[in-house]
Length: 395
Ligand SMILES: Cc1ncc(COP(=O)(O)O)c(C=O)c1O
Image (cartoon, rainbow, N blue to C red; front, side, top):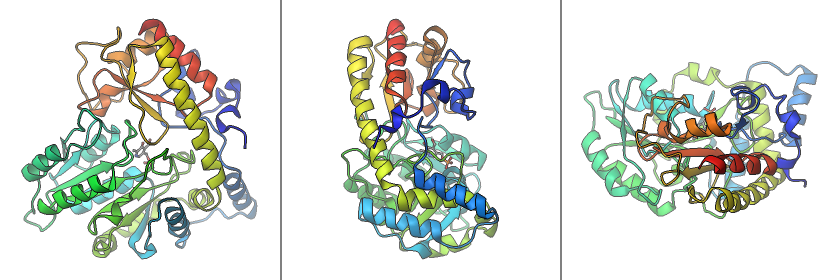
């Protein structure tokens, strides 16, 4: 199969109208938001096209999504999905939002392991919960002692019987690509259980594994939840739907999810995601091969053009977390600022203004993010090369 990252020429990418290629001025190379520069797998295009031709554009019905995901999880991760313990939601973050609201009382706490995907903060605030960080360690892995201390402080049972706190895990971690191990996750589950904290694990990047073993959270914690979607791995963010998968003791929680939530996901999106999980494995493997090459390329290019930027490649996903603390673009005044989505401080600002490369600013990912940028590897190798050359000129 041809490298999916070499299939679309740059001028055709520039014709795309989604946010990645339209947010910045045309002379900026967009290396930021988590979209990949690929054409979707043929079975997905065919399934959506056929549905359109049959006029099959109504409301969603049935368990097709959960069935397809169950097949994928069994094949890729050796994990069993009990379809009765799943719920469809409109997208992963709305799934997180609903679970946070259901599992904790108003004013409760969401624990996050920063640096982490900035909407974890924004959606928790939107749900009127406070956010408390239990940051990753310097090795970019979970710091279980720090997590235990935070759970001890903010956990426990609220007067209405709900948990005071939810831990919103990100596995694999966006932005670092860390894949939490089974042993780590079992310890997380034990900590959560000791302190009455419920766990929700965002596993949207899990199909994009390099040589790591992935453990779905629902398999280690009977009271835990995972959130999954084909959206990142199969590049379907424009066709939104996602799945909650609950552990063995979550039937009551799942039954309590308001019925209106199930009205969010779209039928056509579900058709696309089913074709992704059930029929697009060969395409995913080609994407993973392309990403392996892009990762090796990024390592070589950084060594050659921007040696002040450090990078510890993660075990999953198309995002590279670049440490610019030793670089000329480091900003001594840069501070974590999880409320902020803009690109107006730290190295991302310098790279945008002086090098015309659009990156995600690490500051927005919370503690551990200052003077880092997130670089999207899901693009053409020549775009990666040009971006690193431009960055190297000022770094
Ligand atoms: C960790 C993580 N969770 C959730 C999302 C967004 O998913 P959705 O569009 O299904 O809410 C992203 C998108 O980049 C992500 O990286």
